[in-house]
Amino acid sequence: MIDDLWYKNGVFYCLSIGTYMDANGDGIGDFKGLLRRLDYLHGLGVTAIWLMPFQPSPGKDDGYDISDYYGVDPRYGTLGDFVEFTHGCRQRGIRVIIDLVVNHTSDAHPWFRDARSSPDSQHRDWYVWADKKPASANKGMVFPGVQKSTWTHDKEAKAWFFHRFYDFQPDLNTSNPYVQAEILKIMGFWIQLGVSGFRMDAVPFVISTKGAKVRTPVEQYDMLRSLREFLQWRQGNAIILAEANVLPETDMEYFGKDGDRMHMMFNFHVNQNLFYAMASADSRPLAKALAATEPRPASAQWGLFLRNHDELDLGRLTKAQREVVFKRFGPDKDMQLYDRGIRRRLAPMLGGDRRRLELAYSLMCTLPGTPVIRYGDEIGMGDNLDLPERNCARTPMQWSMEPQGGFTKSDKPCSPVIDNGPYGYEHINVAKQRRDPNSMLNWTERIIRMRKEVPEIGWGDFHVIATRDPAILAIRYDWRNNSVLFVHNLDEKPRETSFSVGLAGDEGKHLINLLSEDHSEAIDRGKHTLTLEAYGYRWYRVGGLDYLLKRRDIDGVNANHPE
Ligand code: NOJ
Ligand code: CA
Image (cartoon, rainbow, N blue to C red; front, side, top):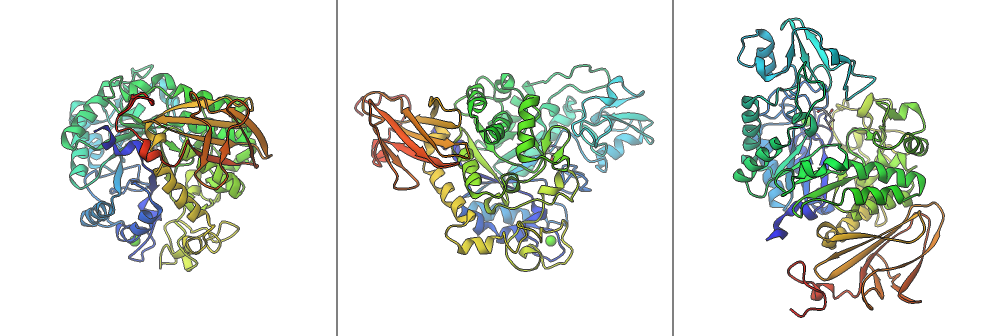
């Protein structure tokens, strides 16, 4: 049954092991600590955990520089601990996806050490070399301002090697069939240990042609099909969630016209326009972005996120739009990064304003896709701008009022716990919020529960409903003889708005509020008129709460047709 596609309608939670919870007291989060926190995640209601890199690594790019694909970094535990973790998740009905970082390795990886040792070495052709400095060496940096080039001379190899990211991350020659076979082997290994899929890092670069002679890199999309085919043979319900910040025109190349490539992609296009919408109180570009990313195979899904562990990349907005977002959410140079983004966490960006945080979360939960929450955002954690680059938003999870926020017994955590200002752990922590029925944490838990009760968002078709007011975004979803409707006011002022639900006959007459007793009845030729408070939001079911009695078991049946 198509309903088996678990990723179509869940709530994902992204965390990095090193900053989550430290059980053995060395200041570094570990699998034992995470295992003890699984009941917290279960209570929050998340359906899948996206675990960031935990394999052995020099840790120069927060683990995205792997030196052994088949192990667990000893600081985090052992393979045994990893399996205890995936088992613990399975016990609680939580799936695990892990990062698949195969565009590049660490320069400490034995493959690279072998490759650089001699032109005849077994692994030489696993990387991308040039005898002379390529003309394109100063182009295509992913981290402008920090990364100087994409080709670096290696003394030992007496040659230049290509690195799309930092110079300690040599690119794998992903066109080499041996490298491709190894990538499949890595996937097969972790699948066997209990994961349900992969968040694939830097997908456009993995599949692109690489080399000194490559002027314009070309994406070899068919590689995506081979990855999926392999995975599906090994485990039918495993998925790949692609990190690919690409233009909507190429989305279908990634999903595959027949749904035969990536199962999921992060919707970067909607993410940027969503922040623009919140910064400008103008929903029109967001509505356009939703329309532009609407086409996708029925089995594919978008990952919808607000913030992740990287900077908020605004590179695809127009310059004027980007300026608006910078001005509102990251006005100081220090808050910006790589000439294109903002490195802050969500709560400080939104001024710690509960109304705006709820609005942002409500949007994330009701736009087409599967929401992906960044750890700590559920309690409104802040950032530490004294830390370099993206590290500012990667501080330890704040569990309690205990020293180090209950993250570790050590007084030397791997990254400083935020311990001052309004976002310090004394104010913002899980223990305190757990006890407060009105806390952000309990609000998030409730909204997750409700999101799970509205499968129409994950499965249905959506229509943006015209309201003639750019500050208002109204979306209706239809699925299996039911409809739901969401209205958001992006503005800091209250708004009155009128709209028709857009369904035939009397269908849209009653709107039942899912979050409060404030329901709406149509007046004046089927029109609803609402007054939304500043940053207000409404979740409605169209019709009555007997929707489960009305729900059809299959798609595409006329609503008025008897079973
Ligand atoms: C994307 C990851 O999200 C980022 O954190 C990392 O630095 C690069 N890929 C390189 O792996
Ligand atoms: Ca530890």
